[in-house]
Image (cartoon, rainbow, N blue to C red; front, top):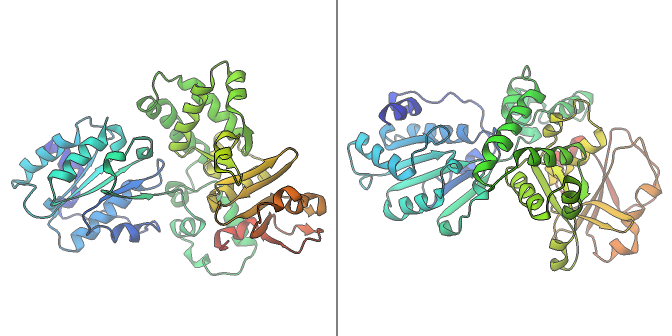
Length: 409
């Protein structure tokens, strides 16, 4: 264990971690280092959670915290439980962990069975330890035992502003919208992970493929009992090939020759792993929402490259709107549909029309009697560049897809 610690903790040897670019969430994370609560950094694979931890360690070192009082340990390749880790660390430190302030960074914690029990034990019995934990699937584990003890941060793939920063193009932040910025946004749609933004030589399809296969064929067995990984992979492919489809779990189970519970469990894993986004059919009656069919999307547009190197841009933009707005709902009733309703409180409706010409029939649902009963506060239309708008509804606000990231809805 001593050798592992020495490899993982280069800051013990007066070496800071070499990361010049930070995620937007870093500064909020940094502000939480001095309180007593467990700091939980959650999110999908490859969004930079480990880097954020190492940048926080840099911050502590620069604040004159003794390097030996900071331990980083990843459970990605090691099976020891956290209690064993801290007892071994205590021996190496040569001082009780109840003496002096100690910072403990536990990475890939989802790999540890019943991790929350160990973390609770450490938190309750070592008041001088500041715990920072991270994992790609912590949301899949029950955390009731940590209620009142943990502050959670969810790290998503890159925003467009972050993408520009990681790409070394931060000079484009404030420029007027032009063909260059539009072109860069179209590149961003398929390079939303830090590695892909930094290094344009990486093939998106290969990179995403490796990530998806690791989640489905390696990670899933730790969270789903008696799993059929090939079946889960088939379900994921169905979703990714047709973003935004309305799915009835019973019908899908019948088509796949399985049962509804299995389909539901597999989709919940894909949602918790941030491979899939699930949104609900909106109703003024909260009880009806859970019983209706769901719409399923790739979590972000980059994932679409896994199955399609030349995807339908109308589906890509619809998926991107779901990602940029983090929409909770859509609305569908018989032959009428609204792509997104942001939340029950905001009641903001969004339609995506990636077309050259948009006329009254394309926006008629915005004015239907069925949708009017929801008393929408705002109505947005997401359009392509240079769309010809021929409708006559002046309540609709049109926004080109490539500036949605900087629009406050």
